[in-house]
Image (cartoon, rainbow, N blue to C red; front, top):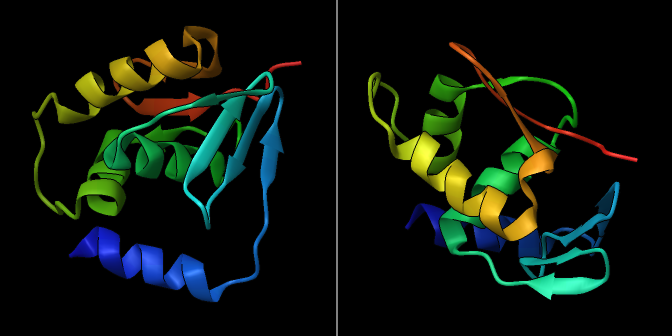
Length: 111
């Protein structure tokens, strides 16, 4: 239900693509390209990427990711974020997502 609501919000907004380094995102179409090639992300991986891309380079805490992507307000100690970041890294490149141990993750702008 949360994803349906988010998709409806995006559908009502003007179509915009975002570029960060060699990473291009079209939130309205929920599509991602890495260095010109389209990459297929799961809905959760896409939501995770959008959350990280909102402020490239800034560290997003695990708790904030759990709240914004999964809607969990109290889920400390879970490895859910870590496993989804691992999948996202495999698809967009491990150098694009920086781990800040004990805090969270940041999307790197790259070149």
